[in-house]
Length: 102
Length: 390
Image 1 (cartoon, rainbow over the protein chains, first blue to last red):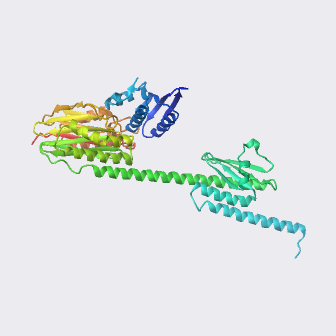
Image 2: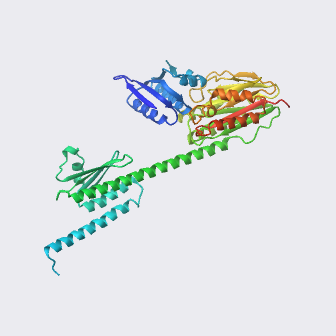
Image 3: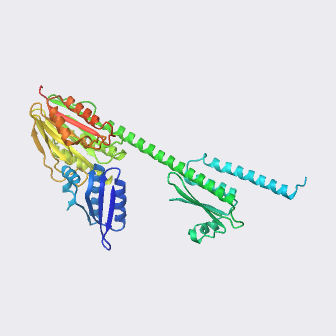
C-alpha cells in the first residue's frame, strides 16, 4: 500500500493519502506514519481513502485508534474521498457513525 | 647453518605466507562458531586485524558500522571518503548477490597496503558479508518460528473458549462451527439455554494473533456471565453489559469487536437481536435470505449508547444465520472474493435443509472456492432454525 503524507507547514494538520490494499499486512506502516506525525505535533488528520480497494478489521482498528488519539489531543481524524469498498464496510459496521467523514 | 641473503629472504617469505594461511583458516572458523551478527563481525575483524597487521579496521554496512583496533583512530576511519588519507587508508567495497553492500576500511600508518593486502581485504570483506547474511537469515527464521508458534497458541486458546456440543433445547435446529485460520483471528461464539430461550452471541475481534485470541476469551466469558444473570433476558441489556465490562480492555489494546447478541424464544418463535457492527446476518424465510443490519458500531470504538433491537418472528423451518467476514472475504486463486451474493445464493438453495446440512455445505463450498488460496481469516457460522417438528 502506498502512503503519501502532505504536512501543512506551521499548523497541527496533515493530510495522508492511502492507495491500495489496507489490511493486516499494511497496518504497521500506517501506524509508523501516524505515530511520527503525532510526535511532530499533528492532531488533525485528513485520511484520503479514494484509492483503497480493500480494508479489513485490523486496518479499521488502526483508523479507530488514530481517531481516538487525535480526539484525546483535541483534534480529529477525518476520512475523506471514500472508495466504494471503504464506504460499504463503514456502513455495514456502523463505523460511519463513529468517524467524521467528508 | 648460514643462509645466503636470497635464501633467507625466501625462507622468511615462505614463513610469512604460511602464517597468513593459518590466519585465513582462523578467520574462516569464526563463521561456524556463532550466528549473532555483531559478535561474529567483531571476531572476524579481530582476526583480520592480525592478518593485515594494521592499526584499525572499520566495516560500514546499511545499518551498523563495526570498528576494531586503536580507538584513537576511530574518527580517522569514520571520515567522509574524500577526507581519508589514502596513503595510509585502503578501502574495499563489495556487494553480494542478495544486494547486501559493505565497505571495509583499513588503516596502517607504518607502511602502505600492498596488492596482496588488498586481495586479503577483499577476502575478509566477502567473509564478513557472508557472516552478516547468514546471521540475518537466521534471525528471520527465528522470528518466523516465533510468530508461527504465537499463532498456534492463539488458535489453541481460541478453540478452548468455544462451547462444546449443541444446546439442549427442544424446538430448535442448531448449527455452529468456527474454523480458525493459520494466523488465528478473533472469531467467537457462545450460547446458553435460559429457561425456554436460547441466548447466543457471535462476534469478531479485530486483528490477529495472541492479543485477538485473548480478547475473544474475555468477551465469551463476559457473554456467558451476562446470559446467566437472570435479572434480564434482553439482548440489548446483554450487549450493554458486555460492552461495559470489556470496553476498557479493548480500548487499551487498540482493538474492537463486532457482536451480535440474540435471544430465540422456543415457545413463540420470537427472535430478538442487538447488533454492534457485525455482518453478515440473515433471516432466511420462504426461500429468501433477508439481511439484518447493525444498529451501533462495534464494541470498543465508542461507549455504547442507545441500542435498538430488531425483533423477528420465525415460522416453522425459518432461520437466523450469522456468519463472519472470513466467509464472504475468502479469495479464490484468481483473487475474487466469495462475496455476499454467493452466501445468499447458498442459504436460499439450502433453506429447506436441516441446519447441519446448511452449515456443513457452506463450509465445503467456501473451502472449495478458496482451495488454491490461503485461508486468511477465521470462518464462523451459527444457524438457529425453528424446528419443523417439536
